[in-house]
Image 1 (cartoon, rainbow, N blue to C red):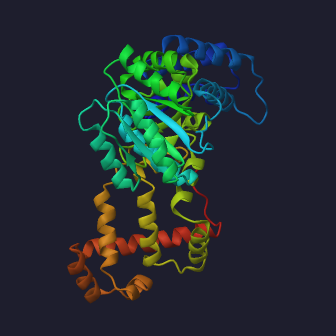
Image 2: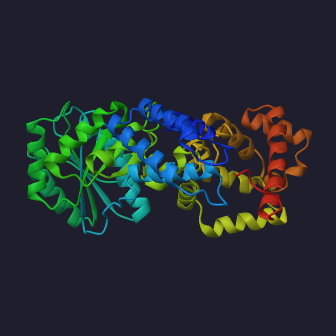
Image 3: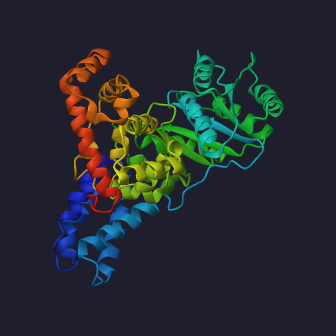
Length: 435
């Protein structure tokens, strides 16, 4: 997501690195590069024009302070304008009502039903809610079945009813929610291939019959600038409270994310960044701008880590590292925790200077992690605690137990020892990280 755009913007800013001051002459090339990068990322022409004119005007009017280099000042201006374009403030999801009613709307194929499951998973984890999924897509074949499969995989109830009256379905679902203490109700509505009167009337019927606290449009980011027309079409009829951009982990150019708030005034609440049911991230304009400019997103990494690793466990691991007592049992536990964070490639991309270090293009095969896990679980508890005792005969036994070669076992043990030394240095403050 945004890798190409970020690379182009970084190259544009390089043009003024080392300059003594900002002048119209030395930033003209950078402005031109930025304009082309935004247009190629499918950003609306008028938005590009306004953005580059504002950046140029502010850059030329700025006083370069002694502690700032011209390129640092220019990057700061670009970042500030990106944040404004993206919406400045994070639009929080309403979760305080009892129950909170959220209606998901969108065109057919936008990923609405999967997103319903993702939101249910999110509010349960982040806000400790007891969600209920409501099947109101009564036209698409197997839509209800799909929602039930998602609900079952998450352990979240799905309300369905053999009826063609969506208002009746929602009414009975709310009764069910009351009886079962479900405090967050997610209504998965029907979609169409295009915005039409029949679709809108059905959604309006639900809106007028109940107090809907969140009306969120799910938009496939792959459709590019046409997403603006889709958002405007729904917003004109429903007064949306937010939008979710799906498939942002694919080959989408990402330009639509830069246009939505500016052109429609509808805030982006989430982005879908993987196909998994935990692949939903809150949209934060500042963090997104920093990721585009390769400044990293350490706060998002920290939030993801907090979801799977308790503060107490983290402190215990650090204490073990400092004492040199971190062993393969601890490593296996951490490996299982890391798997819960989602694809490791997505975490690496959030590190500062990730593109510069080539971390954005790393592909990590899940099989590699599975092989490491198989090797460690084939060891005895004593061997995991004391890997130094693992010699030739033990390696042969472990190799047979896990189906991996002795060479792989040797490599893992060597890498683990190197990692242990590095982690001890870092935890003791004797080594600086490269960012």
